[in-house]
Structures are given as structure tokens and as C-alpha cells.
Image 1 (cartoon, rainbow, N blue to C red):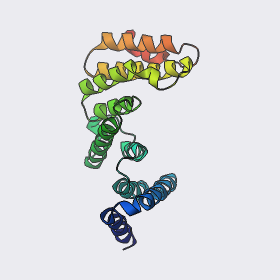
Image 2: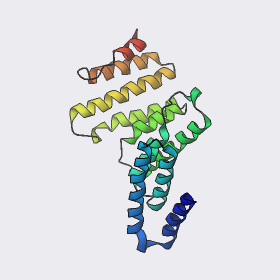
Image 3: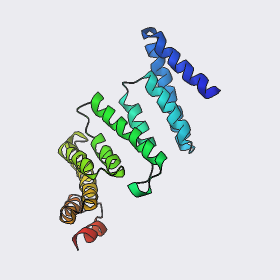
Image 4: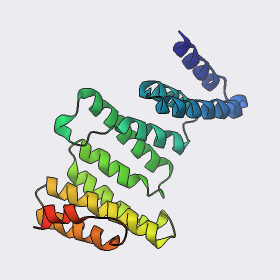
Length: 198
């Protein structure tokens, strides 16, 4: 009953119109904070419910789509092990990543996440395209060369995994070596290089 009441209140604000835009934003922020609390308590469905209403109230807020994207990702990365519910959530995450791109065409950080989502859904070719975009746009993340290199190393490491799933072991080896070269002082890629290059 309380859940339906909250939804009806949120939709009422949407229908009333512009005088309540500020109020909608405040309610959206409160729902966003509550979703974080629920996530910390392990109530993912409750967190998602709050984020969904927050997005209805504030559909131009990129942070809300980003939060829902992370909430729906889960831990599975092997498409053969995904349940129907996992696939449903991954598809929601993919829509959110696409929405972020639509709202901010200059955003670059979401390419990496979208690549992971696509790979999880079995689209490794699409995942590689997104990782290529992440590599191309990596300087937009930060001006610190160390942080840029870490981000790039993760990109190359992930792209190596995606290439290996497509049977491109030589490409996977090259990308793994590149990841190791970029972060030789603070990240260890020994196992991955060994797996793909020996």
C-alpha cells in the first residue's frame, strides 16, 4: 500500500506541472538517498523502486540513470550462467547506458560500463566497439596521467577478455601486454598475460 501511495504521489507531481519542478527535484534527491541506504542494507529491489520513481520525477538527471545502471548490473558476466531476471536487469542497465549517452554525448566514462553490459549479454563485438570508444576518449576522465593509465589498462584488459571470447587469442595477448605496460608499477597483469600469451 505504501509503495503504491509513493508512486501515486510521484506521478501526481509530474501531472501538476512546472510550479512543482523544484519540489520534484527535492523528492527525487530524497528517493536517490533512500535508494543508497536500501542498497547498503541489501535491499536491491527496494533501492531500484526508489530510483525508478526518482527518474520519473527527474528524467534528465544522469546520476540517476548511472545509479540504476550499477544497481542492475549484478555480478554475473558469463551469459550461459545468467537467469532470466539477470538478463532483464542487464537490459535495463543497457538502456540506462544508452540514455546517458543521449543526455550527454560528450560523456565517456559510460562506454566501459556499456561494454561490460554488452559482453554479459553475449555481444562481445559490440562490447569491443564501446571499449574502443572508452580508450579513444580516456583523457576526459581525469588530467592525472596515473589515473588515465589505470583506466586505459582496465580497458585493454577487458578488451583482451572480449577478444578471447571471440577466439582472437593473439589480439587478447597484445591487449594484455598493453595493460601490463601501462600500469607496470601498480597493477599486476601477470596471470592474464600468461593465460593469453603462453
